[in-house]
Image (cartoon, rainbow, N blue to C red; front, side, top):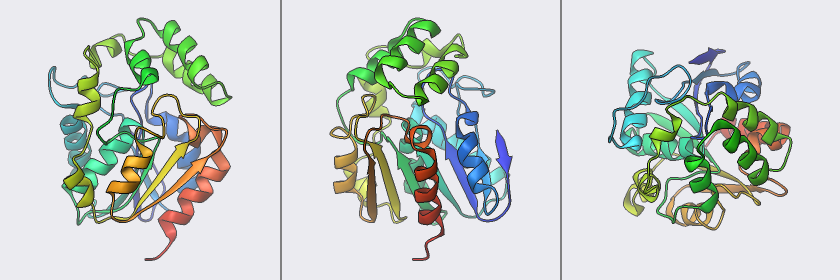
Length: 247
């Protein structure tokens, strides 16, 4: 877990790419820490955290893990930023603790019923770190892919066990129902890359926009699945403004 700064708490939840850890948020942590207490855990199965229990719902396991962390730190309210699968968990937290989650930022987010995207299926199914690294370069042909490649090469040996086939079930597992999404009271900012081939806009972003009651969206052009890395300065300004705007 990474923790820096002081002020209103903000949790940062990484996605499900191979080798991903809390360290993926380093540029954003530096931007937020002067005015916020920033906490970025390694979700179960990633970084320094142990594997989740076999067969358990990942949404349930990751949501419970984060809530236990929040309670252990005596945090009464917090904003949460989640990327990809982490976006689904951010929405799940807002659903589970409506009086605790103050704002949600979901980036390239899952969290809604959709078909398994081909890019995500290939990523979860890659048989080796090198294969994943090569795939990332194809799916995210930008400077951000260099960072993702490095992360892939650090992937835990059990990564391939996290998302066994049929992988559609893991997309379904991370999806909130329409009723759950409609019940989220916290303001939500959705951020997506127009060229995202891991979680395409048509599969997730548009459905979430329709389902959430208090939502605004931002789409980065010339951007894939990693807008915090591909458009770092713009993303950080967008996020800071959203977190600090009084409602």
